[in-house]
Length: 298
Image (cartoon, rainbow, N blue to C red; front, side, top):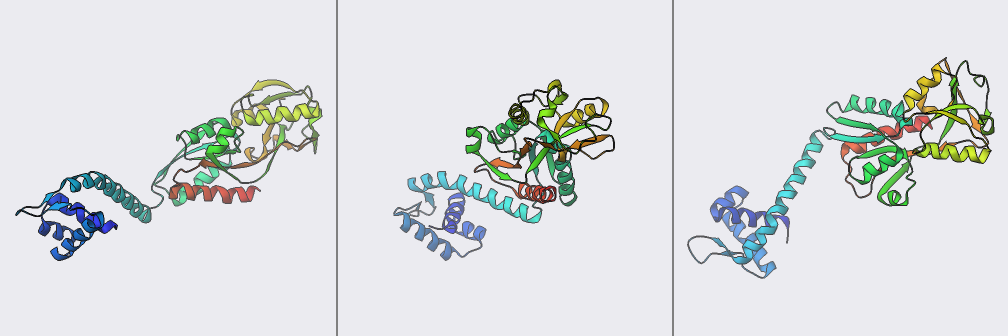
């Protein structure tokens, strides 16, 4: 059985007239009759009653049409979508979830570059925790994520993770801070230091707490902020220190970004999407833009 057999069957089932069905299909009546006969022979049952002057569907024909009609409509919608993509593959919308580290510089840079080539695309960007990004992708509320490898086993089973590069988290202080001129700072030296950090619910904070424990340091967390931009602004205006991915910090003369060691906190950012979910041309193109930008970061 081929798709054309079902097209011929559907046209005749709708018109119940060989002449009109043949005209609609742009074929001769003999061709239509032959194709219908082939379909009936393959199925082993007549689909049309031709015993009178008018054509009627048999019971088998009625049953077959109840299944083929929605299937053909779905195929037509798919073909229409493919043709639309071919004409303008980037006329679409996309929901992107990003953690705070990438929402400051990397993602805006990538979205700006993407929109320069796809001005008709609508991109909704949400700044979320890594946990919320994983949940949003798994629940179908997001299409693509820029985050870290899912920590939860259930999320790891539902999501694909594509590593982009390795990044260090660094100490960020105001230029007037006592540590501002240091070339490197050991984690143990942060013991008792007044700091602003992400809340404990964030995976980055959990990683930093593990690093503090390994170094035997217990900083004095004065402020917890769930967004990187206000954290940097607070560091700029106070004597508080923070630990932030360098890619999230715009170089400025009033800030110092200092490497940490013993241990050096490192993370691997990557692209996340749901396993089995369709990836539109828009999603594939934006993912490519992010990959290229990440290549420059690495």
